[in-house]
Length: 225
Image 1 (cartoon, rainbow, N blue to C red):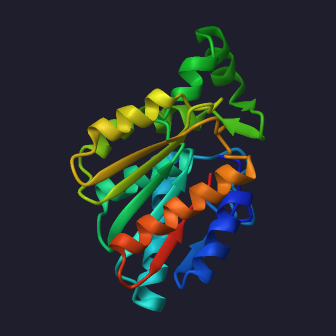
Image 2: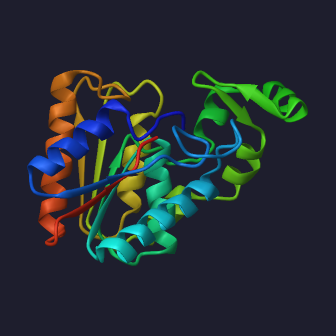
């Protein structure tokens, strides 16, 4: 939601992908990092369009046809929503700390009164920056678990059992919904950001191994959130 293509995890992943002989593509979602967009207007539907645009770039410029889409947190839910609606060019997915509900934070951290206050003001100040109320209406129309049931790609789900933002149950809900080849890795003592260097190392290696298994041409597209 508030991260960029220069975040620690995604930068490390891209660097290690290059060393492993894989192509990596990082980008900033609309209104994030160096991308244009109204501050605070961060929408799932727009992020899904952004992923589609990234895939189109890889197709048109590099003829990449077997992509491993990697998303973290909100980016992981976005990957699910994109892949369910536009499965072209995708070989596999990696979902890191993915919420199973687009409104998870709102439901677990805001009272009805706080949501009404947010609606009235039009914007609230989140921990990482402002969030406009349009986020709520946009997210409410999307169902991550229902989208996961439509995915017919090998999918790796990774989650830390000490994730302080997205409960571990979200990983299990998504994993149970996936109908195809899948794997769930729960990392002991890992937090939402996989901030321990050893956790980052393992996360990167898991991701690269999964990509190599199912993407013979070695193209890796990565999103962060």
